[in-house]
View (cartoon, rainbow, N blue to C red):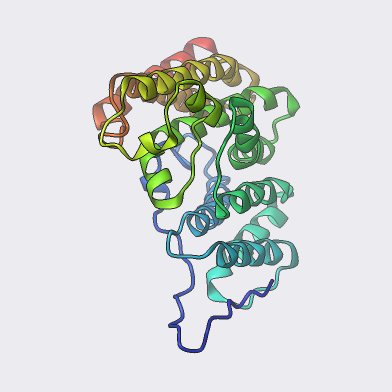
Length: 291
């Protein structure tokens, strides 16, 4: 595939892709002050690469072939260090970061694998299929942070559980938009079929009892993942990363509880400032007590 997307002569060229939000707009902290100051720029470099790739895959105005071409160009730039277009700058910056820290590029490349699946329309047929998607879309984020902070393999599985839980919570938040705008369904299709309903229920302004029961089933499984992730802070040696992991687990628990009491089809469910503050304080207290 070419870095330069070739369009018909009479069709206006779409501007090069760019990320539509930054780290301040995320559910969970990115490169917070809890992390060592000298490592935060490297976390931001990884985030900006992933954010751009994610927004390319999520752009409703791009054809699948175009998305795949952009994603291919990002990976080629990351591995080769050669960029023909300005939008590829995050790939060059991440390459420099990885070279400086000695962290592998496999984490970023694994995430691109998930985004290629997104580009052609993701539908998860079962819970195991959803977890396999998270294996590439989310788990590499935690693995990157562990490697960046010099952690060993002991924390890997707990980190995977946390990252998968965060990804599933995000899918529940965006379930209606993912289906109506992008034709994607991260809700296990076999559960929808067993409930005797259609995936088209996701376009409704509110959940009917059968769809609501599926959402609660997903949250039960997600809480199991968070229970597995609860061991993570105790497995991390770096104090800052340990504190951040504890805070993120607490925030995820709070978001899961809020999704139990609020319908994501009515409006996007998120934590308000006071919910976030309480969750952060609870997470910090847990980490300090366990230390």
